[in-house]
Length: 274
Image 1 (spheres, rainbow, N blue to C red):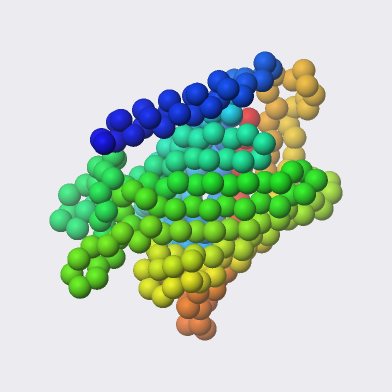
Image 2: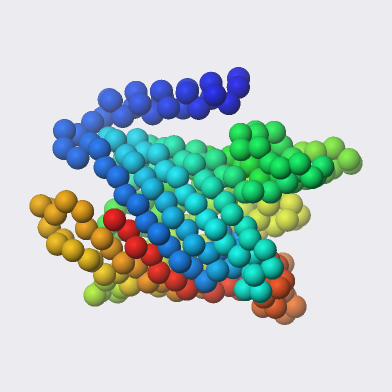
């Protein structure tokens, strides 16, 4: 089945589910945000240095589509740039969210040719990756959440006896949010990978790959009432992340020009959402 048929099938499936469970009020919604962060760290892995990120989401009766952009320097020495575009289609209801995310990094294949945006083949280099995610958050009163994510398309390969094998890199995360009052929030996360995956450089087996704490402070800008057409929210954050797998004194903290291999990371920044 070609990628166009796959995407159409996914869209039709979520459309049918949405029509079967529709509320009469607030069926359509949209939001947008912009974030400036000192470092772009993803599931404990260093991706980029200072970064500007933006996203836009439209939703209808639980079905949603999102586009996310990142433009970041490779490191604080600004030795290069690491742009990224992600497309997401999903469905969310009653705390349960199922989505597919198509991630594209402006990279090159092993032969030096530019990556293609829709390339579902397995490869060692190249910028296209597809991932399925299922997440669940219990409630606001019990802010316990879990996430399971698996890469099923695009770059996710390693070689065994000269042959390319797909890793189906899987990430499992448990989280809990602590309301500190006065719009302060502390989010704690622990992430693991159950088998050989990109999170361990396609080495080893089960590993704890993230222990993170994120402190947030929010401000509401505008009239925060039910009658308000659109309310802006400003968020400042500090995020400390440790990648415990294979950590030692030599890779705990590295120079900014070699930060990609660093195990302990700090990201501070702010975002604005409407």
